[in-house]
Amino acid sequence: MRLLTHNMLACNIKGVTNGYPLGLEAEKWVEKEVDFNADFLRGVFPKIEWRALVGAARALGFPDLLPEDAPDPSVLSSSDDFLRRFHRALLELHVEEGALVCPETGRRFPISKGIPNMLLHEDEV
Amino acid sequence: MPRPELQAPPEIFYNETEARKYTTSSRIIEVQARISTRALELLNLPSDGIPRLLLDIGCGSGLSGETLSENGHHWIGYDISQSMLNIALEREAEGDLLLSDVGQGLGMRPGVIDGAISISAVQWLCYADKSSHEPRARLKAFFGSLYRCLARGARAVLQLYSENMDQSEMIMKAAMRAGFAGGVVVDYPHSTKARKAYLVLTCGPSSMQTSLPKGKGEDCEDCSDGDESDDDNSETVGIYDRHRPTKRLKLNKKKGKGKAWLLKKKEQMRNKGYTVPPDTKYTGRKRKNHF
Ligand SMILES: C[S@@+](CC[C@H](N)C(=O)[O-])C[C@H]1O[C@@H](n2cnc3c(N)ncnc32)[C@H](O)[C@@H]1O
Image 1 (cartoon, chains in turn orange, brown):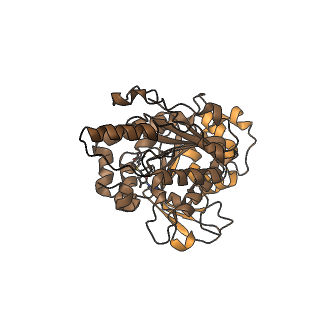
Image 2 (tube, chains in turn green, cyan):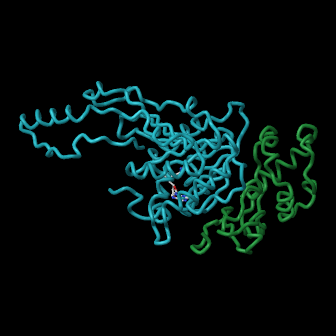
Image 3 (cartoon, helix red, strand yellow):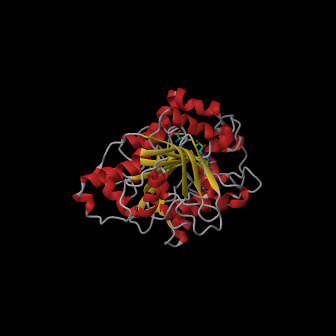
C-alpha cells in the first residue's frame, strides 16, 4: 500500500464520524521506483490531505521528507526538488506489513503482503 | 453449470483453483484485457495523457488493472477474495490492493477519484450469501460510497452479467438513487457470446444524453442468424436519469415482431408437424429492456 492510498482511505465502520486519517503502523516497508510524472502530481496535489501525508511519511521514518505545512501550490511549478519528494512519499514508499488504525474506535485493519484487510465484521456494517 | 453467483459466495467461489485460471487460461486473460480496454474507453477520460487515479472494483488478479497501468494510470483495486489478490501479487500488479467487500462501502474520502471500472463483479451484490446480507442495502452502500468518492463529472463504467431483468433493474435503480445519471451500453447485442453490457454512470450533472456512446456491433455486423436480419435495428443504448420523470425511462423500447406474427408463425410450425409450446397469455408478451 502506497501513501497515496492511505491518504484517500477512511474508516468505514457504521456510525464512525471521525474515521480519518487512519493511523499507520508500519512494521515493514519497501521502496519501489515509479515513473515520475509531474502532471499527475500537479493534478493530485489539491486532493491530498497534507497533514495525513506528513504523518504517514513520519510513521515510515521520514520526518523530514516533506514540509510540515501544506506548501503553496506554486511550488508545483517552481521546485523540482519538492516534486521529487512529493513523488517519493506518495508513490514510491509501500507499506508491506503493519496496520491501519481507526482514530475513533481504535479498530486495527491489518496490512499483510502490502494488502490492508478492510473487511468489516457483521456488527460494524 | 449454474451461474457462479448461485454456486457460492465470491470469496469461496474465487478460490485458489478458480484464481489460478487467471494466470493459466489464455481465454480468461484475453477476455479481461478486452473488456477492461473497452471500459477504460467508455470512461472517456480527457485525452491529455495525464495519468489519473482510478478504482478497479473487483480487481481480482489484476488483469483488468494491468490495462489501466499500461495506459499510465494509477489505480486502487478492491476485492473480496484473498486467492484472487494473491494472483495479483504474483503478477506484480502495479495498483494498490484492498481486501474488501464493496457491499460494505468503499471507505474513500469524498471527491478524490477520477474514475472507476469494474469487470463482471457488481452482479455479485445481488445475492444474499449470509443471513445478514440484504442485497438492496449492499447495493446502496456500494453505489452511495462510489458516488461520494468520485470527483464531479467523473464516470464509473461497470461491466456486468445480470441474471435477469429484475436484477438489472435493481442495480440501475440503486445507481440512480445514489445520484448517478447514465445508461447502458451494449456491445454486440445480437450475439449471445460476445454480448457485453456496460453500465456507464456519471457523477453529478451530466450531458449523457448526447455523449453516451453507441454499443459496438449494434448494426448487426456480426449477426449470425440470417433469419433475424429483417429485425428492426434495435436501439440498445438505454438512457436513465433520475432527474427525469420515470415514465421516460422506457424510451426506445424494442418493438418485436408482435403477437399476431408470432401466433401465425407458431401455427405454421404446428402444421408442419413440429412440437410447439401452447399459446398462453405469456406468448409474445412485451419484455422490458435489460442488460
Ligand atoms: C470476474 S472476476 C474479475 C476479475 C478481475 N477483473 C481480474 O482482472 O482478475 C470478479 C471479481 O469480483 C470479486 N467480487 C465479487 N463480489 C465482490 C464484493 N462484494 N466485493 C469485492 N469484490 C467482489 C471477486 O472476488 C472476483 O475476483
